Amino acid sequence: MSGIRSASIAAALLGCTLLLTGCSDSSGPGSNSAAGGTASPSAEASATADASAELSPSATPSSSGAVTSPSHNSTVPAKAPQAPVSVPGCRNLAVSREVKAAVTRGYERAFPRFEHIAPVPHRFFYGQCGTVRYAATPFDPTSGASEGELVGLQDEGSAMKYFRSTSGSEWTYVASDGFPAGPHGCGDIPQIPRALATAWRNCAVAE
Image (cartoon, rainbow, N blue to C red; front, top):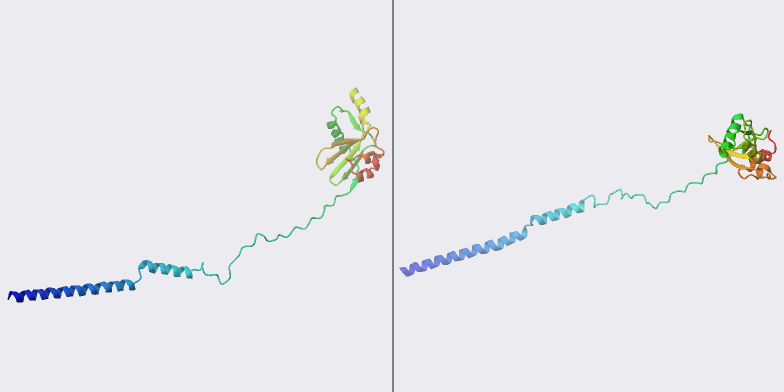
């Protein structure tokens, strides 16, 4: 009896061992097959990102064509040269007392020692070239002149003095005749435009 029982127990143990071995074999290969057939979540996400990049509008050329910015090397048309501005000619002008007084003050500013002077009658020339006015005159002493003024005017006052003024500015002394004066009068003075000197008849005698 004990021999039969031992044989039965041994057979039962062998059966369990075979059963456990079969279960282990079926779960191992089967699980490996399942793992190999199912993609991991990270792999699926990577594939989705690649597909999105291929279909992205930024990666796909626009059907209307790319817009290009203007080239900085484009040639700019050169401006046409401006025509030179015409300068009005010189002309002789009628002189007023106000102009004579303003010119006299201009000479007194240049030579403060002369305070009692006046333009020589019939020797005052006045004209304009463009926007610049010109004047020419010698000076005589007036009443109240000091001895120093009288002596000074004998040397300087008898010579023709030349002045200029722009619009709205005071008269400025610019030149004087030499001793003796040049053969062409104010035509020999560089500060006086030649066309105006001609209109003044070289400062011979004023009207």
